[in-house]
Length: 410
Image (cartoon, rainbow, N blue to C red; front, side):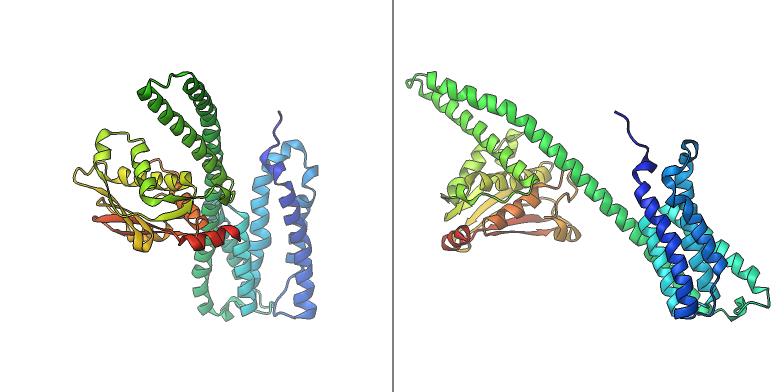
């Protein structure tokens, strides 16, 4: 398979830039001379911008041996039609309000078009210095309308602010692009893992189902073991389905909801949780009464798995740390509280954002985001309270059964 060079993939952008550079400078020349007269304009400068725009309009006709210079020409083009021209005309028009706005527009346009901060910084500095030098040289000529001696030097104080804002915008844009790429990669990775896990789990589930039909009813212990293994395999397949639905942002199917006991679901979760260390189970305790809730049991278990897993991760190096799961019937709440290291206050507002991980090595940042989406779909909520160096508590609040039935019927 033959791949196109990078510059060919961007040829449409380059052509659009060429057309804008050609027509906009001619348009503004006539605007500033005849419609809204400005103290200074230059036909030759505007024509030079149109001239350097032509090669980009004809980008598809460049000889093959010259195409490697397209990125360099693109940056030189931007430096001339935006940085140099706008800075020079801003200086010649004594930093008037209109021209300061033009300068801001030019810098932000550069921030959008140039991804690399160093290249952006170099473009702005070099282009502005050349413009200042040209302005100074022209200022020695007595025939021009404005000299450098009439410059409102107080306006220079705005330049660092404009420059800083442009660089900040560029940095924010790059972070946004990086986040989108990360999200794309993680979604692809999660989808691949879930797809690969489905095949062996399906085989195990099928094999166990076959064995269950062959085992004698007299062997109760083996039968019980096989039933538990079959149930776990089935639960694993359901978790994969939930994961794939979350990746694809598919709404939760409320037809799978049933009335379940909060105490029973928590108890089953603790018994079925895959502890990586036998000592981990000893850190957990379970207390409180019970209440009924309308939900998919697998979804509630998956939420609890995430919260227990997070708590165990942070307390595993703390021998005295404990994890207490409390049921609070009067508030219809399940609380998972650990006496671990706590979460910094600055991290709490972002805790449920997708792909945000608070110091967890190898974490994807998908778990808590999934918990929040799931609790919202159940008509409830999830909240976190934490004190650094003391505790972290996640609280699941479930709606009244009547409220959930109304939501399901809607």
